[in-house]
Length: 248
Image (cartoon, rainbow, N blue to C red):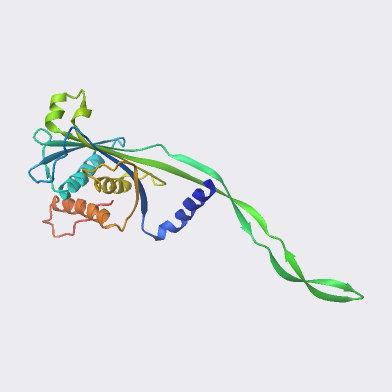
């Protein structure tokens, strides 16, 4: 089974450059039995707070804008941290890579061929010969990273009353997402974690649910486009020049 998994990863590495990116994500979500989840309404505001282990504050801000877009897509308003109905706290991280090193057996089949041989008395003739198959071992090495996203939705009033001592009593909904893969580009992968997670916003999955998202997925494209539109409209455009698109 390990051989099959390794072979799949190596084949994916060969095929992937000419194909759309495929990212596998596992998501588990929970609903609190005590803290009600708010029904969709633009009058209900949610403040988004994002942290990570990347050490990149601008990336945190970028992810915050992506989450705010997804929250709006679910029918809620965005509020300020000190004046909101709910607080959505998100933490994303890149785990240490695990390197797999080994070799894969490659069988080279035998075959039939013709050869000449001496038949005696100065005569040569041809005959059939069987070449046996043989096996070589091709070395491989690749690294798999784990990409994480944890999200908690707190009711603001309960959060204030807890004074930061028992935040579990203020959680209305929470989610944990994980994505193993060969890319350490967390900025490029985070959109897949977000889309997979917010597909179950306000739901209890009851178990870990795995899905595979493609870069051609319309929700992935819409999330990237929303950030580009917000970036473009925030820049001065009075020079008569086309604004460059941000890289994602």
